[in-house]
Length: 501
Image 1 (spheres, one colour):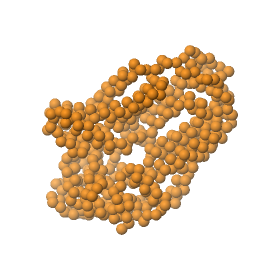
Image 2: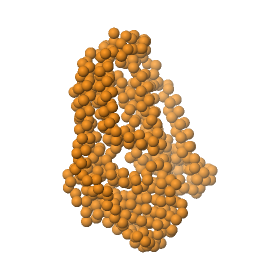
Image 3: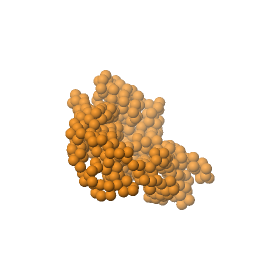
């Protein structure tokens, strides 16, 4: 009688008859199941946010397949459990303490990805505590693959956009095609190309990483080859995206129309990356190890004490709940006050006339500006959410670019696909321009915890509303000219307000 019931092993190490669930497994699996349900309730905000991202962003549509694939990977490895018994270990629940600490830090800094990764780590701790390290190690591959449920990597989009533009510029220098590259705007005699968020390559990189991990787990056994596959799954899509963008520009030059290529560039992109993935698969086939016989287990695992599984689940969930409980107490002490909106009058300049309400009109485009001041102890996540809401940042096909400010810093401008308006947003903290990165988030988190500030973060919002349809080159030129002429005064007003003056 083995751990899972009466079952022999064939020459490949798989079960020769269907195992019967033994008594030793029932209570630990019940404890784990109840624990997972409690985990879902405890971290429902992180789960719902992930599902919303899967639905709204084409970059993460593949995440719907991750859980079924993980279940399939676990089923393919079920023979590894035939000689194992669960060995609940409540002391493993202590590992939930650093995970919940990381969750707390990520929550105070407003980093949803960090919260989701920490929550996933606490799920791993729950499995480890309820079933023991031998079972967790036997199912390491399907458990690790669950990490792709987290929609990560969005913060790299601006860097990937810039890298793609630089690669296109470098490759065009090797050709005789006349070109001019201004930030993310690429101009050739046949028209303009713009490196939008969708052209940054993140959707291909994330999909390639998920596929590469599956390919590595199924086709290879040695850690070195699996690591090599993952390195290629990251590096090849990044390089291929630059080649793809360069190829589109060349096609526009050959066909005599950049607009004709731009209309179907996403279709061309998927076709190109499908070819790249196929080539990677073919390149890896000569080195496959999927036919290698799995390493045999050294022997049956020692029997654990099934009743300890309930204690392990309770302890793991108790430690995991420490972070959310502390956050609930902190938030209860803060009044949920909306940001204060302060109109910012603009002045007339060359080619711009003053209109009603402090707005100016430049070449038929109405421009307004306002400042939004948040409470001193606000979570930076509220600032980021307001930025996303104001810019309607829901699609990676929108036109985005940085508009520099005199004296340093920049605004992030976005033109939503199908809308004529362009919204430019920037943040200030402690009198300085603040990005949306770790430094700003950590600084505001410390201010919020200590309560040592008289003024909160400030958002500057500039809206361009043209009479007709949006034109990227025209609207960008108008915004840059307004900031060049009035940006210093605008930045000074935002900095002063963020200092409480």
